[in-house]
Length: 228
Image 1 (cartoon, one colour):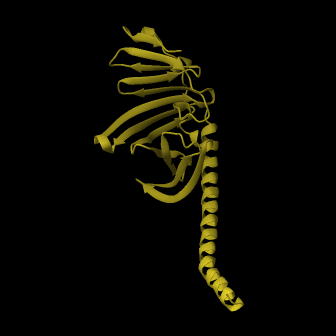
Image 2 (cartoon, rainbow, N blue to C red; image 1 turned 30 degrees about the vertical axis):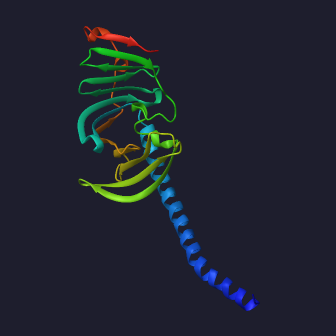
Image 3 (cartoon, helix red, strand yellow; image 1 turned 45 degrees about the vertical axis):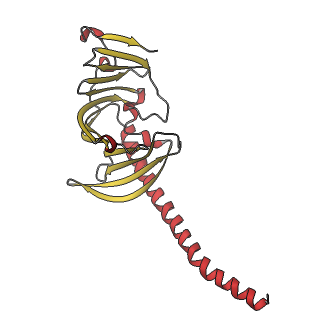
């Protein structure tokens, strides 16, 4: 093979590779920019929620299971004292309560309450961390703005760093004007979607300490099953 032929092949490879390399550099630069934007948005959101001593929120919880042709919608209410991992969630037929150490799950239909140890791990998306769970254990990317009713929301997709998680993506929609979470959707690996839409959020409400404990006397006939 002559030197002229070799030079010709090298030039040809450069013509093919150069545009590809430039494209990859542009994509990497774009991802870095959007990640930086997502990080800045989430930092602002986290700062706001961490400033709240207590939170009261009414929400809509939806389940979409295409395989079972199942769609469900429930309205609920949440009280939480995030810094102490305390919460109370009220849904039709069910309550979930935690004092930060134990969790009580009350099933109205069965007249039963199960007690277990609280999971306060950093990677647990529990009610007390509903508004700050994204701060650890995720990589994220800003996907743009959208309209939700009369509001402009900023959309961020989260992917768990732990690939063993049962879900592969969480999509956050954040009110651009208030830096508050408007809604988020969890996409699990079985094709199901679970959505939380915040209807009304009231910070720093006065919440009695008794809100975060289960009083069996107020639930006549309930059976307590202690799993601790």
